[in-house]
Length: 353
Image: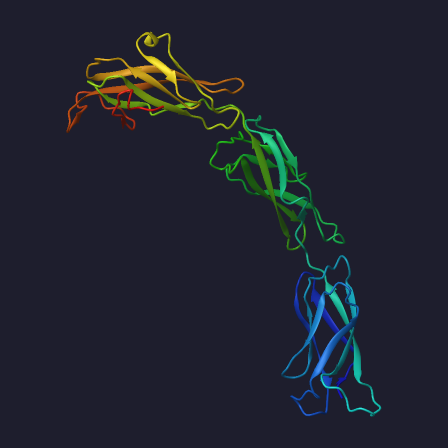
């Protein structure tokens, strides 16, 4: 028959927040080792309502290995008392009068550990317009120290701020902007800017908690549309030619398309060139016939639908070249510092819009 050896009480200590084996319970059994009559089975029968502890048998020496499987919290309970029963794997011989099991008490002391402050909530989410004034309040963070019995103070600092837009008051946790929030920045992903902050307590050594801030940036119409391509090449003997171009805008709806394209009336180009709309993002300009080999600069105004709308006064450069069946010669034309798109202009009957 198996009996818990030497002591009816066992002692153990464990640091809060940790897991693993904390004590081995020894037993005495005079049956043949490695037989079912010798093997001990341990059961926790009281003191484990949260299932924070488990016990299993060491197959080599029959000891009961008591483990913490869920981290304990000193601030909730600094002491735990377990009642553990041990019995044989095999049933005892029938009609023999003796106890079939043995019990012992395990007293566990939880040691206090300095834990890092906790942000509430985490992550923290706010919505702000881009381009708000420098010095604007984003939010005031809230972190609490789980070590309620130690009465520690908390200081705040920046952990990660990719665009260097934030500053935080180390005492009260108020976050303000020190740069212009830009939704179109490469540091913004899917309209969200992410930064992280630290809360550091006054313990010895100090413990640190990390909180994540997600700023959802609302779009402001702060980008004028841009024209593309800005350079096109055509053949001087082509007829009924159309040059197609479009516009791009870094902003999002409703500050994006539909775009409005216009020829600059101040330059008088509207009397020479004819511009027609294709769709919300593209237009085309008809090339007058019989143009000589040269570069022609066409001032174009492109405007977005934002409130207020933004207009870009840009230029479309058309390079008229001499073309043969085997060669396109633009050598007599100036070279532009931009990507040149060679557009072989088709007859209107072959070009479908």
